[in-house]
Length: 465
Image (cartoon, rainbow, N blue to C red; front, side, top):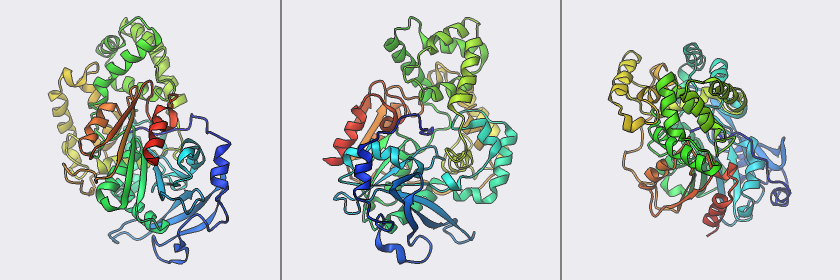
């Protein structure tokens, strides 16, 4: 469920026409609820966005704790295009992570979605704990940056948990889902069209399950199934062989990168580090150029280039400040949302390591090849939650609850390791008449990153039909 970092140039020119021509004043972009008082009643402080003046920004105030036991509120930044009378209503684009803000990317996303913005008003917001209100965990941020899988220092985990304290439990996806429904009401929208990428797809699914009558249609890009993040990453482990072999064929390499990967892990026991680095590198090059050669040398006992590759990904790809992707929010949300070999984060800390070890012993080579079972139980997000303090977690939706009977587009790339397309088929089983599009040569976050335009065109056709 890795983040969508900004390495794709924005499409310029047409964006200013779409956003600017409809913008008539600082109070135009939102519902007429601006005079309503109380938590969640209005979007206040409406004005042109500081970094994107062709759009309107404001603040939605939400309760920190909806039970009322913990006082306090949060101010969530919201940005919209100006076409308040868009015939198809509001299109809420949900960013990934968890931990990535939405408002700083509205100009870029308006460029990506420009063909549909005469019909939709684009809405983006900073989910709680992100952007200007990012949860700050400096040690964890240094260790993991934008990575899901990098292994952090144990002290960094302890420091983050101590810094967030008991309020960490108020940063789950269930809290974000409730925030979205307050946003919908503040926008004056009866229903929302949701377009979610990576973790954003999970948020969209969970919103649809919680508020089925409030959803018009769903775009799920780089899909995380509604059951949630798999901390063992048992889809990505075997998918690596498929992805690397496909990339090898595309670039004309002459080795078997999957066999070399397996040999490298047998030699060095570094599977978690390799998977983390490959998952980061797909944002740089979905053809993984040079990786088969690096793995071939490492398998033969020459790991120098592999070590250089690890350092390159950590320094040049995964490095990110909390304002771009908050590892504090990332950890709080995943630990609250996920099911682990030991159960949930409501389980006693003392028994978790033993449960994880029992799981490692039960895993088979067929489940993890070309990695080993220790890879599955040694990934960064797993280890963060292994040591996360015990806390009450929100209930999960019923296991077999289906998405509402609305149009659903599931979109993925055949080179994606962060959310392999096998997960998309898993989610499609719980949708009514889903449309599935797999884009050749594309990695994670198809709408933002793929050179092949087929995925974006599929979104346009789906949203306008």
